[in-house]
Image 1 (cartoon, helix red, strand yellow):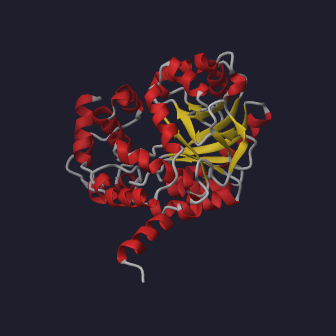
Image 2 (tube, one colour; image 1 turned 90 degrees about the vertical axis):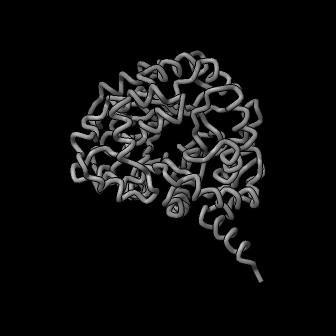
Image 3 (cartoon, one colour; image 1 turned 30 degrees about the horizontal axis):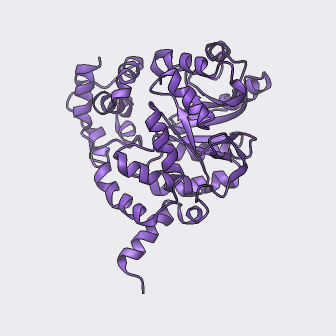
Length: 372
């Protein structure tokens, strides 16, 4: 007879989608193509039904890393780089352009599309900034589930793909994530999804079924924001479990030092240890308390429809993430209308809607005082 502890441990792995993949992940997952390796020996995984072969760890460029860090990442086999012309006010894309110059054939390049789907000039300008004629995969940046249904995105994808701007199309989202992913899968033209996903998220149990559906339908999954609200040691223990989850292709992470890169590579090479997984589960409720999971409930509760979660994110960036302080200022400045003491007065509907007990009103005031 199983003890309560054994049952709960198994339930955790089942809900996280790990049981099916953990046995296969001992340096290589079930969807890993071992024959294709970089000099570092990293096994590569196929991104959905595309011909893009990428490693389990890939490079995000939100921090606007030093060019030499990017070049080092490439030599270590991190051949997939995801960027945006908006990161670090354009500095990140400039650094990517310099890092890949002369070795474009060694890199699989992903680009976040932050402009409207009818803006051809913005697409051309982004490619010019990167110094390339096209990227391998472009990601529409959409955070409203209803917006995902807009047929303008499919028309733009088909037009830009025909014009040779990119080969494959994806969607990246960090708000209303489950609904956005569902709607993207229903559209039928995406090749990959790039959701924010962390074991600290309140609705994490809703993701495994979506990941499995994406895998079945041939869409690759690129995870981002996997470290949210998880401390260093616990996070590196969690990495093998993320990678063992059915449907996951890679973790995209903003690695800013040689040491960060090595530590992520070491973590990725480890099997998904059930005992460590149990410790992660036990720590999740503590780690997530008081922290924003970008679920979007606060914005849905706001009678003015203000970007509440974005302001909380800016406040978090400013206080808790040294590499993203500049991003906090830039993101806050770009908001068309931010919540403020004058606008919100004594309304606390956003805070009442939060399932994680985030002190949203405090974040709004802090952002207004230090970022405005």
